[in-house]
Length: 253
Image (tube, rainbow, N blue to C red; front, side):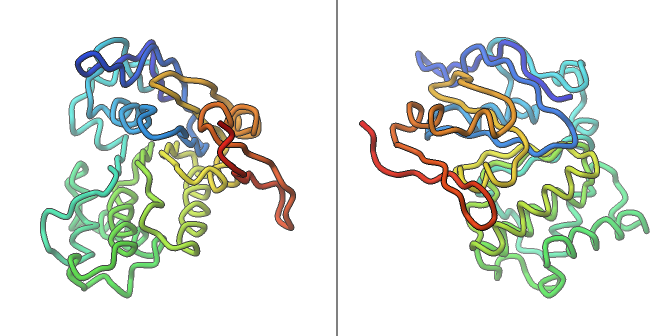
């Protein structure tokens, strides 16, 4: 279990997070949803152990995340930041191999198998020998996620991984993350595409102004009645050929 207790982060007089209590279950896809400035990325960074809260704590299996060393934490938690920078113009395969760094086995049979699996899962074999700087934005986003997958962590934390992807790859990526979760991996992602989050995630955390408004199954959290006041936009749930879908209608203010 990955959790936060009474989590608070403050910059100056602004509370980015204020008394957040949440528990994220393994083997499920959990979406963090909320308007800009709600504290979504800050919460994700705290859960990844990359940001120290001013109050409260983050826990991994009941143990304070701060008590884990960086290598031990990196083996268990794979983190993909928003707009992950490309520091070196290396081949895509070499970029993905960096995901094995916490294990120190990128050149072993086990490491090479993990790298090949990540290439396959993100449809990147055709680009394996290309320099990463020559990739399109969407291709680079997939390569950065493949680097995380190559590390085979217990948890995958991704900050808006769908932003640079086209529609087909968005659906493919969410389907893949569901398949990863089905194998017991906990998946936590910041999502601005509420309809896609509602369709593919199991659970959701709804943030507003640094506070947790609601947490639980997406069917309970991502509802028109909850989303409308948070986003200031009217929502409606409509029936489609593939099931119910959330649609934003208009500015309700």
